[in-house]
Image (cartoon, rainbow, N blue to C red; front, top):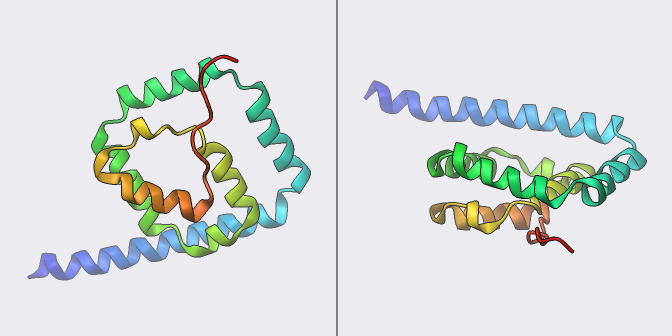
Length: 133
């Protein structure tokens, strides 16, 4: 019985801390990060990061992060990230810019629904082509 009472309380504490932490980070980014800096960083990522580096990072994630860890991370992001984060234009732009490089093949099958929720929530486009142009 004691374990069952502690689990909901622990979950509510984690949810509260996550909400406060994410809300604080959103406020900092919205106030301190100028639009020009974000635009420069996102354009730099798209134009100057080689496709080989993106492919290499995907291979490393596949090898080093087990399916269960990736699934847990997606579940936590879907469950604990508050709506204030999704309402921040700047934060959504950064998440979408990085998230578009995540291919569907590294998403575990048990997390596809939650990944689609995150894609919708943060307006993440499909993976850009990793082949050489």
